[in-house]
Length: 168
Image (cartoon, rainbow, N blue to C red; front, side, top):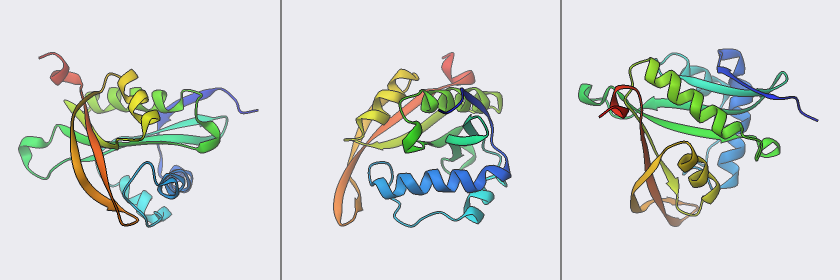
């Protein structure tokens, strides 16, 4: 039995666990267009950027994460971050994704971001329900946004206003 869930800012030492969870998501083919596994070194590089990375733990084990990244390089978009959220298969359904997303939204707002956004495969109903429960709205669909294993896939765009952006 796993312990209670806790949430915190990620540290470089969490990179192996984050890579393993992300790679599980890549293999599932329902969460990302990515097909090549991430290395620990690639995840460690996330910590060189100013964007927040959150982990959810059960005891001393990382069971999920949410990470922000740059949206666009233009200065006018500096307050917008793209995000990803992944939970270890054995830990799904316990609220880890919600904990990670709420903590990411708080941390991003504290760092001056005003919007989080992402794209989710249309058929990924679990992620769509999670994000709706965390205050994200679906703003449109990109048709044939990319190919995964040779098949065109559509994605729904989701956004949540946070910090100063939420007050307008």
